Image (cartoon, rainbow, N blue to C red; front, top):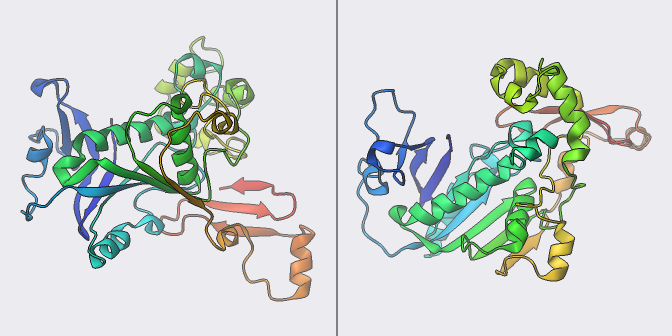
Length: 333
């Protein structure tokens, strides 16, 4: 399983771990952390071994940990995005004399993380992106001490889809507390999802279309067939406009997302930890047209007479969208 974890310690990046592997030679519970190893690489199989090649630092008491879940509409974004660069946050903590350790994780996005349909539900494979996040939380809990972090002092933090993810961890498994974090910060999102939360039957028509276009329409095990489709073929199918509007989001599964967040909050079925919740100033500008300088241009926008080009992830140049301001019709390419 591949997982990208970026760790910042006392203002300097200590380690960038891109591959998480289980090496049975050293026992089932031994996790090996390597950075793009070759096939004959010797895999360090403990946090202490993994850090052996890192510069020696002075022994200090365990530090508070901040773990961020990047936003991006559950369709794009990630730790490399400059908007989620944690080095500045860590440096500020150093400057005020309260150094922290900050970590950022990646999780599967779009249909690769949130594919849905009856067959996917039957396989227990809904909300895989959220489960990636949960696995990362467990990894932090089990291993962060080797990086100088205190597993009892972990705060999870997210913006937009990252904030929604934080909220979903607060209500995960009907509010079960796995002792993975002691506080949560949510910017422009929360436990009550900002979109319509659907179930597998709602996604079934879109899933059927994916199956058909991927050449698996006449196969009894459609999900198994999709797993064998070459990546380039499947990726081309999934990037079609019809599969990106409205897209694939976290859905009700009776497990991770047990119920509507509003119901759980009303009943107190959530992890009871201190939270900070709010919205980012001027965040709506990301959804608005640029260069509106005249009254005529403003009227034209309000009448929905032209499309607005947005580059959602300018640092990576991966996602581009056209949006009609009035009827909110969205096209990606």
